[in-house]
Length: 261
Ligand code: BV8
Ligand code: ZN
Image (tube, rainbow, N blue to C red; front, side, top):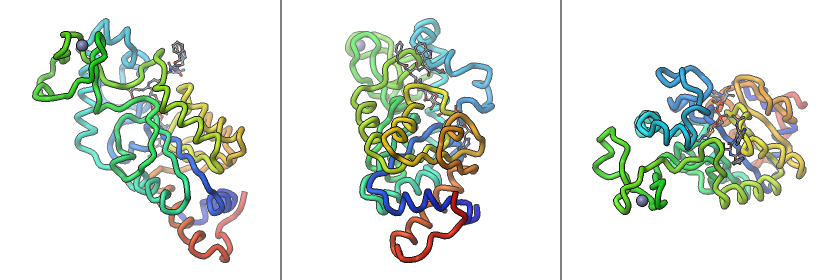
């Protein structure tokens, strides 16, 4: 990734920004080895997320849905945050207010050091009882493949993630909308922008005056709508972006390199 690929107008806006939101999807964790949803990934590619990530699918076949999450939990337990996650965390030292708004449930942003993370679709490390709502700590049964039962009432235990047709966690959603509405720059990274209401975050930011930059190896709905599109992988683009920003912030008098757009 050559430094010249970062459009001037993005660097200038970031250089002067008081508040930045980074909106991320599964592509953010792809270089860590976490498969994306809509890419080919082994046995699960024959299912659509919409067929597994629903309450009705879980009630119809709890074991199948639990196995899908157990499969993903196993992968997530073995991976590390990548250069992209770390660059997002480094932004916090360069911009007064940074909020990560993620659709991912893998906890990798927090593990990379980001301190303000709004998880719109929950977190795979948390589980709860579908009957009484009691949180369920994964103890010894973590090893057993069976769907765990609630210690309080014997109800089925499910992952604390947002399935299709379910409302997003109110607090996280409201905090995310507040952050997006007050941002000077919104950087969307690694998302196909097809799942709502999460995918409306960049438009909310842009409507409130933010510059929207989309980072993705492929063009898509968000790159069409964005002010700036950077075609590339999160782990390649974000560290270069942060390096430039560091230079800019330390020497605001030097000209911003690169062709402007
Ligand atoms: C809601 C959580 C209100 C668990 C997920 C009918 C009834 C009800 C609602 C609807 C309906 N019809 C439509 C809807 C709305 C629905 C929706 O949007 N459906 C879509 C499919 C059309 N939304 C909902 O249901 C939401 N709730 O609306 O509630 C309501 C309630 C009741 C009744 C009416 C309304 C809840 C949606 C949440 C679903 N849960 N997951 C889990 O993770 O298992 S969604 C799932 O998709 C993940 O969260 C994922 O993050 C999300 C989006 O996918 P992406 O992250 O973008 O990943 P994807 O693989 O698609 O793309 C990866 C991208 O990365 C690609 O662009 C690729 O090019 C790029 N990439 C690859 N490698 C890299 C890279 N980029 C950078 N670097 C790389 N290295
Ligand atoms: Zn219970």
